[in-house]
Image (tube, rainbow over all chains, first blue to last red; front, side, top):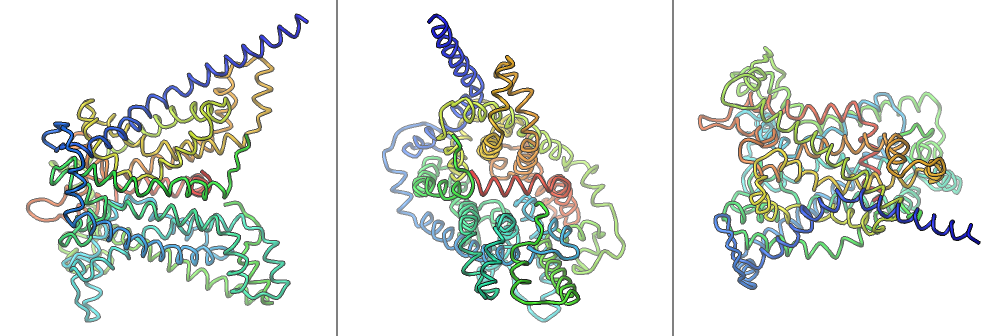
Length: 303
Length: 295
C-alpha cells in the first residue's frame, strides 16, 4: 500500500520537475517573443489608429482617419494591384521553369554535381546585392546587356516605363526559379518509383505518366513551393527598391515599398501602420490553410 | 540528396523507350549541355559583376561584354584599403550580425523546441504559430520595430540588428529543430532518465549531439539569411551598424558611380554566403527543402 503511495508521489514529483524544466527551457523564447513579436504586433496595430509621424510619435488616437486617407489616395490600391499582378506572373513562370529544371536534373549525366551547385547560387546572393549587380549588367553606359543589344541593332532604354516591369519579372525569375527547382527536385528524390514502373507497364508514355502520375503525387510539394514563393513575392522589396526605388513614378511600387516610403519618406507612421495592418489582415486568413497544406507533406505529429 | 539509385523521371524515360547503352550515353551529354546553359544563365549577373570587378576603369565602359583584357586587382584594393569607404567595417558588421544571430537563434530555439516537443510545454500550436509567423509580411514589423528600437536604444546597434534578424529567423529554426527532434526515438531519453540523468543533462549531453546535423543546417541558413537582410538594416541602421547589403551602394558617390569598385564590393559581399552554398551544400539543401516541405 505505502509502496503505491510512494510511487504516485514520485510520479507527481517527476511531473513537477518536467513542468519546471519545460518552463525554464522555454523562458528565453517567451521573453523574446513578448518583446519582439507580441509587443510589436500590438503597438503596430495601435499605431494604425494614431496620428503618429516619424518626427512626432505623439500617440494621439485619430480613429480610422489613417484608413480613410489610405483608401482616398490611389497609391495604396495601385501598389496592391502591382504587387498581386507581379507576384502572379513571376510565381507562375518560376513554377513552370522550376518543374522543368527539376525534370532535367533528375537523372545522372556528366557534370551534374557542378551544375547543381551553380544552379543554387542565385538563392544565396542577397537580393539587394543582386540588385546592384543587375545595375552593372543593365546600365546604358557600361552594361553588357545594352551593349549586346546595340551590337545587334536594338536600342532600348531598359529602365523606361515600358520595359521596366518585364525587366523586373525576368530578374525575379532568374533569382527565384532555383528555389522552386530545389523544392520540386527534393520532392522528386523521394518519389516512389514503383508507381512509374507500373504506369510504364500499363503503356503510358512520358507525357502521360508526367501528368497523370508525377504531378498528382508531387502535388503537396508543388503546393509548398508555390505558397512559399507566393508569400515571398508578395513581400518583394530589396531588388526593386535598389533598382528602381518603385519608379518611374510609382509604376513599380510594391506594397512593401509603399509602406516603407509612407513611413520613412513621407514620415506618416500612422498611415504606414494602417497599410501594413490591411496587408496583414488580408494575408492572415490564408495562413492556417497554408500551414496545414505544407505540413501535410511530411509531418504528422507523432504525439 | 542521397544517391537514390535510378531517378524517377529517368526511370520513366528509359522505361518508356528501349535504348542502347550508346544512345543513352549520347542523351546524357545533351542533358549536360542543357543543364550547363541553365546554370550559366541564372548566374549571368554574378558572373558579369566578377568580370567587371577585374577590369581597369577605362576598359569597363569601352568593352562591356568581353573578358578583362588586362585584369587588375585595383578595385579590390580600393574597396579594402582606400579611405572614406568604410567597407571593411560594413563587412565586419555583417559578420557580427550574422554570427550573433546564429548564436542567439540556437540558444533560444533549441531549449524551447525541446520543451515543446518533448516536455509537452504549450503544445503544437507553438510550432504552428512559428510556421504562421514565417508567412506574415515582415514589412508590418518595420514601423513598430523602429519605434521600439528607438525607445530601447537599440537603433543603429549590432545587438539591435541581431534582435531583428533573430525575429526573422526563429520560426525557421523552430520548424527545422522540431521535426528533427520528433525523429529522435524517445527511448533514448527514457533510458537516460532511468540512469538518473536530469532533464538538462539529457538535453545537453544526449540530445544536442544527435541534433548536430540539424544545428549545422539551421546555422548555415540563418547565417545566410541574416547576412542578406536589407529591409531591416535599411530601417534600423544609419551608420555605425550598417551591414554590407546597405554599404555596398555607398560607392555611388556625388562624383559619379565607381563601377569597378562597386562590383568588387558586391562580389566580396556575396562571397561568404556563396562559400557556404558550395561547402555546406548538403546542409543547405536539406534545410531549405525540409524547412519548406515540412513545417
